[in-house]
Image (cartoon, rainbow, N blue to C red; front, side, top):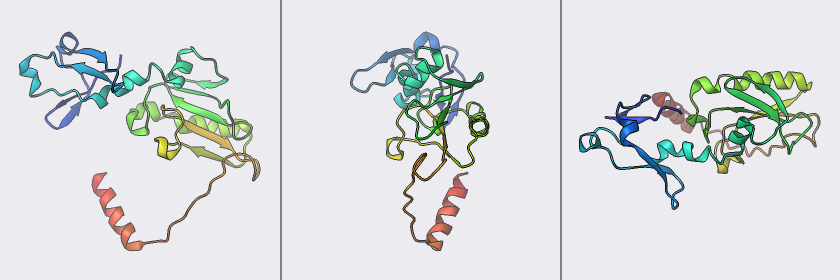
Length: 194
């Protein structure tokens, strides 16, 4: 079981408090569909330990995730590559011949939800798939969230061969006018947060 994160002060710590397993009881609340803790921690822990619902949401959703079921072997797939942390298989609704998906075995809905070590193989495997498919032109695509066209709530990378104008990914890219002052401000804002 993945180690739960807890909050002490203002920083997240990736280890279990010693008494966590004795005091933490989890229940699935039907209204929110989140796996959330019941407040049964001793009073002395209430001020230093906080368990937000969103931090353990992924544990609830991984039980029903179609990609997690594929990883567990509960649903068959056309497996291409499997490592300790990653699985690649053919897309069953391909945009073109050779369209494949590469997923981390660790469940997370968005890229930011996945530990870096579970992401390290995604692009190298997508590259191997592109070479093996014989694709000269291809798209590597990774969407995060419904507004960004993510269909399955589990991080995945598409390798989509583009053999001609009609097959593969078709993108209508609405370009915006260049705003150099706006770009300078945005650049400074992002750099400050890195």
